[in-house]
Amino acid sequence: PKQSKQYKRMLEEAKKRDHRTLGKKLDLFSIQEDAGGGLVFWHPKGSTIRRKIEDFWKQQHIDQNYDIVYTPHIANLDLWKTSGHFDFYKEGMFDQMEVENEQYQIKPMNCPFHCLMYKDAIRSYRDLPFRWGELGTVYRYERSGTLHGLFRVRGFTQDDAHIFCLPEQLQDEIVGVLKLTRSILSRFGFEKYELMISTRPEKSVGSDQIWEDATEALVGALDELGWEYGTDEGGGAFYGPKIDLKIKDAIGRTWQCSTVQCDFNLPERFDLEYVSAEGTRERPIMVHRAIFGSIERFFGILIENSAGELPFWLAPTQLRLLPVTDAVVDYCKEVAAKATKMGLRVEVDRGSERLAKQIRNAEQGRIPVMAVVGVKEMEDRTLAVRSRKLGDLGSFAFEDLLDELKRCDDDAVEMTKMGEVAVKEEDPAASE
Image (cartoon, rainbow, N blue to C red):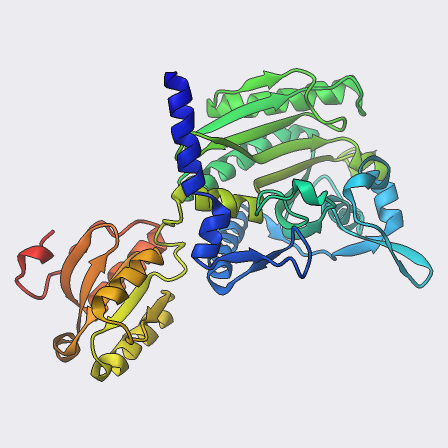
């Protein structure tokens, strides 16, 4: 009975956090049935959050010596026959289109494109590893009955990367991927994971030796980091062993997001080679990896995990200025222009409502910081600051407030108090 009560509570909490409801309420995204099921329209606020997620992802990868690449959305069907996707994955692909008597396929995966890029030149062992990241949008056929908000869609953007490396580089590369995964997920508040290594299934490609070495590298990487993991014997893909990572959300649910997979199949199918130190031609090891899984699905998880209360650095509007009278609107616009120039996201309320309603609208819009602006604030060049989480914080010189918000944005921290900024007015409500 106790467990069923807990489960019931979790279901009620999950319903309140449903990303489809919050997405509509906060005007983040929609699925337009006129355009077809499972296709996501990102509204301006949702697009702002997505851009912040993608910019952070890209910078983290560049800092770890990845190159960001872009590839087409369609390719000749022959490519998908070479990769094996047409044979093994046909039911998950959209129908082909005919172009000048040839069949073209909208992409369900990014990996064959990266294989073609690798093959575009003769590679030396000195060149490896290559680390190529792509926020690549793919399209997969899903039956309409299986579609579900952002969690199950027909068009989505994978945070894909492929590493081409020497066998002896594999463990270090896996360690690098796992550290990067931790660094990225922790920024979004996900610190608890469940890890699973999946080993060789009955049907597989590649020699015993290469499977053994790759599995050893995955285990070695996790052991090196001291991370706990389970083992799914025989649960690997036919083309290589893998590590799957599930994140735990605020109400205890687990979500499959990150994966690191070794692939012995595509290098064989595309005849990928490098010239070894001895001058012989050898196969590189290919590693597929994703951290979010897909931008859409991760966005949905993020909304549900935070119940729409996004961290300050991700909030589509970080500060809303609430003018008490038309006489202060120009001052509000001046503050907003300076804030925007600093990279902050600021709105000026139209001011057509009473102040209490303006505050309530900002609260319902989950805006983390608002500032009431009257004639006194305009004359003193201050802002009366109210935090959604902390209530009234007092009045501050507007440049000081913007500097503090910029610090919070850059460091991805919440505004718990006004740092070391001096309060302008002696008001008990404004004390720390």
